[in-house]
Length: 452
Image (tube, rainbow, N blue to C red; front, side, top):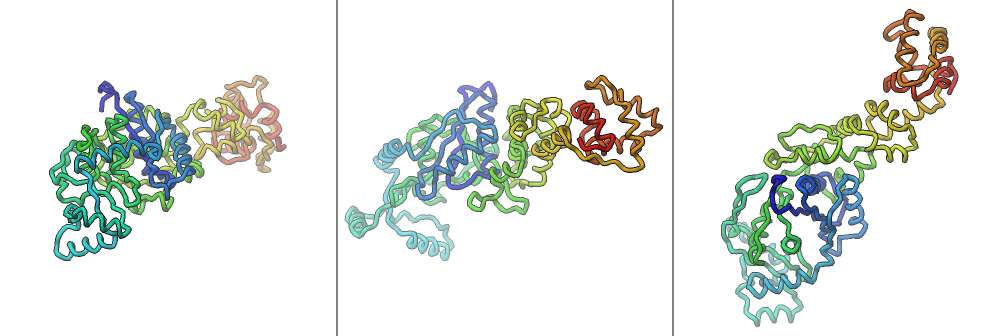
């Protein structure tokens, strides 16, 4: 896609609110939302919640929270459960045109048919026996308490499309079973409702996981049966656990909520979810616009990609080192950190998690129990006496310029005792940045071995 393409693209993310989103779901959401953002398009969040037995309002709310945490703001939010009248009307059209037909086999009977075909060396696809039923036979089934499920009659042809990730694709629908679009209880399956919604909402690009490739052939025929042109498709590779195991909402693998609670940065999660499994380097980004500019479907690999939590932890730290104060100010305040931009710039390079900033704020604010070795006490008292009266951003340089010749110390013998006394820590942010924040009186007291 190009920024100058017309009309502006319309993309959607259509999760089922049946569990918590994991990083694999985030990959799909990010591709859709960021492409829409980059090209001034529309990003739709569409809850696939027609499965009332498993869909919950709590999971829908959790999805909204996760997307907000990632920085993704939908331009439009829809619930399929509120669009049933639209589906009903489309179903009547498909029935009238002969594309939908009723079938009455139980799951046990269908499994027996599949097993029989396998034993004969045939593909285990539906044999379309329901098409041969007479009105009397259908009436007998229903009189016996069987309600039909409804199948879409495939054309059995070669469906072709150019995939933005996979290039030219084709599937012979004659090798597929006619898909069930309506369950026996009258509820609709995603395969149908997704197409109807995409038509109604004018979706131009469908970006989703490669596990939907076969669905694309089926849904292309449904689009055409409803008189619509299919959108452009892009099927990205899937993320896996480091072990190679697939991700599961049901099992809670790498859920966004858990990553958030562990202190991972949303931008780090986004960068790793988008760039892993591509030919592009996985690098930290300071904002979503930078990440959006890097998305290139032609650079996505065809192989599954392993999402490594250890790599995420490192990327979280690297991301924090890039972030400006404006990006973290409110979150720092929530942690009780009130040091402002100067404090943030002083400590961000030493953080593995944002929460670590609170520890360094305590070092600045005090009280800190200074660490003063006996052999360094006289030196530190001397250094305390040399603290400048003018306390500004250059105080450390002026101070060291006088302490070094007066003490005759240099290198570790000079700097290590000063750091231990001033911060109580053996390592950390540069003293050049911390000293102006600590203040003259606290610095003097700590150098003299007093908690301050």
